[in-house]
Image (cartoon, rainbow, N blue to C red; front, side, top):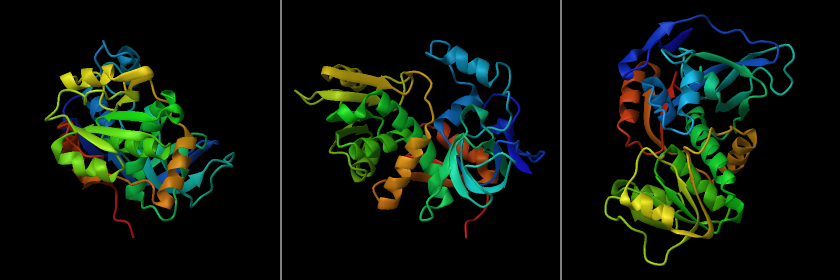
Length: 311
């Protein structure tokens, strides 16, 4: 099968398309024919090995993914596709099921086929949702869902999302609205309209503002960008908390991928209450170009890779 391999860390050019052996599912595994995947910020950081030791889990991540080179040369965290075969003990899925999800540190989705545990973080794809949209949804929904739940979103009335236009941020805005929060999104001028259409009640343009409106306080401030990027405005956001308010960042620990978050997003997608935000769409052979774009740090929502045209 064709796969994109990364045999050393470095710039996007370390990625190349190669022929590798097709994986065979174990007794409790499913083999998925991948229709679409995505280039996430995490994919970019893993390829470039951008995990500083001061990062809360930087050393652990380095050990898990490989110190000198990737332990698993086929990268890729998310997928959407069709189950081609299942192991003899699989009961949750069957051949022909259309599913999507996230493989986490097992990676492997930059390939025509990927094998994963039936108990992994995957769910049946709604018929109304394309593989392209499903691949775009998985990463942001799972990470935003995890951190918002960690911040007890169900108890928070006023929420600020810093970095509201990225993959995690666009998901966080929509999920926070689902839980009934009044949402303030922080983004650049070019992304104001996007964040507004996702449901943000108010927006702060970080290219023009370096403070929070006087008297504004939030029950939850979620930093969807990470602690390696700071500004006067971000510092102000961290201080604009109610007495019982909480600040939480995507850097705060290793997120757990929960199937129930995918199932929640399934419901919202079918109702039309959740949108897949896609900035750019590339094909498999354009992986280097896709990574170059994500490396700029200016993507809106998600960058999707398709292996073949959908019917």
